[in-house]
Length: 412
Image 1: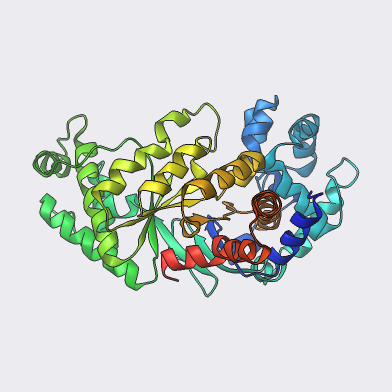
Image 2 (image 1 turned 30 degrees about the horizontal axis):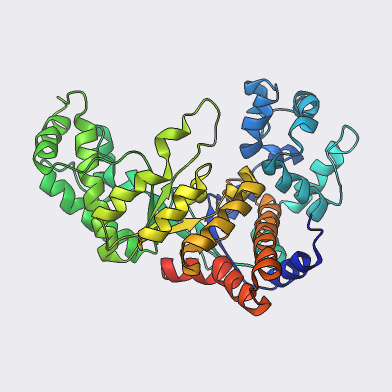
């Protein structure tokens, strides 16, 4: 909730701008409207970790999105913990969806059944247009559903393993089958097949590939060639699959640059609990970007919880862009601080303001976008009030962050 009149005015003007949703995982609409839904679907996915941290049984927390578990069981499981997570950033979108789409302020014992009935009536063809185009003003979604489904609103980004598949013989065979071929017998033949497969997917509409910002080791072609032979012969030694994948990943990233598509990198934080986020720090992208200077990289999640590191990357690596997707759910406050820091560090064409990052709950995109708009409004209002930025410049910057930058970088 914005209390600053200037920030509120900026927010209202942002709502009139077209928006590119720069990161989702949404399943096709026909899958969503074809499945059973209840109101608890809105509270699944990103609230899971906080609910478990609040004391909820992990197995019960995992049932909130289930089509089989009765609603009353879900309510009994989540009710003792809902108030404990209410102030978390990830709780904002489901509660906002209750208000915007179903006319309720809260989820209670007395209304969950009626809310589920409303959601089932709402779960009908045209759902995505109503939620995304009409309610959010979204003009384009950069979607990572692990499939090639697309339409005039959604454009696909595929996992890099879709092309590499090199850790086991079975994975290599799976990639080859996609091309109607048998598993290549040599690494050079595997590279040729991967290049052909990549070109085909680009021709079919793919706009990027996605990986994770693990610590980088440059590929060794000689070691990879020997390891590949052992993998396809079913005689792999420990580490052979990694040697092959490391080399193929370097080739893939170079070819992405040649094909004019983007490499997206998950960084900073994992979605689930018990995860060591230090192994995917945003700084891990630095040697990758330096090696592949003609390839564009989209660094996800603002590097949360290391946004200052991400800012210095955008400052010094002209082929890396910073994507605030999901960060405004993890912590709107830190996302605000990140964006303010970045304005000090890097040019305004280096950031993307929004990505919802949902699989099933398309209704939650509205609340996630509202949080992102509030973040940007707070940052730019402060710059206007305290540092002399003009309102016209602030609006130009916001349009870049919400729309122009992702379109330019992805070429869509």
